[in-house]
Picture 1 (cartoon, rainbow, N blue to C red):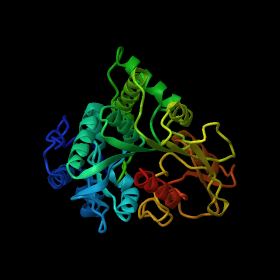
Picture 2: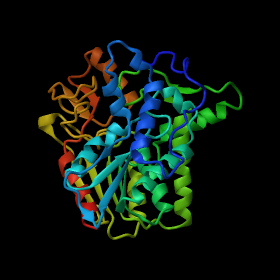
Picture 3: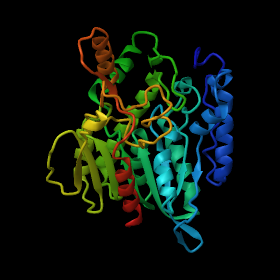
Length: 385
């Protein structure tokens, strides 16, 4: 889909409309859609669906038909911040739920995303911080209480923004990248070390782009930027306490980020209004009564545990849901066990299955079977304050 990834593109990032805090959000959407239209190579494919692809990757605004108002302003507004390699599509289900309950939602596109994986060769996490800042400023004049909803890297950016902005009413963190798991940290460190002695290798993984809402190819720079961002967050949190109310959701078996570090971070917070929803495959009680656990064993759906990517998606999601159009969608199949498996595990299981050494296939879960309950929890966290 994105063959010869950077051949037809400039070696710099496009001019994202994120520096003018007075830019109307409708203009931000229009300009960003134009960037996507100009830089996505898959739109040249005669079998592609250009408008579907552009819309899925573009920022959006979800205006409630029956808004909760405070005078002439919306009482509650949420900024939706996607994760690394993802697009605004990843938080659309959450936004739709909030829209149906009177809450204004806006999503942003993090620079380097939604266009071409090669754009992540040149991005800095400071660009992402600027995009979040613009999104917040776009809401400030129209909303009384601003909430940030961040997924993965978007969660880390939410922490950063809230720590620098005391007007953020609360943050919702989904699969937060407090700390990347050890193997990825090792790869980043190895890449930094190797650049001292040899030519820089730009790609951690270069593969076929088969998902129109999420990159498959991964640049070393992108992972390095996330690593730097998480370190920056840790340094900031050591200097001053984090006071913003928080609702955190994570799978204990998360294969991408460290759930243990996320739990430790949450437990270190002293805000009594903060809450955590921990999905786990076995019973475990935590002394912190703000941590609520939910078991993830769904035998009827052949689900063993919840993955990093599944948390924000509804079972009815048109792309990743039970009847989604993605080739990876977790369709109900008694011969497949769904759960949290990293790329190495998935490849190993695939080979073992081809050799007929396994009775079942093991694949990454792409939707959250508990989505409706989780979305209601998020809604109540916002409306209850």
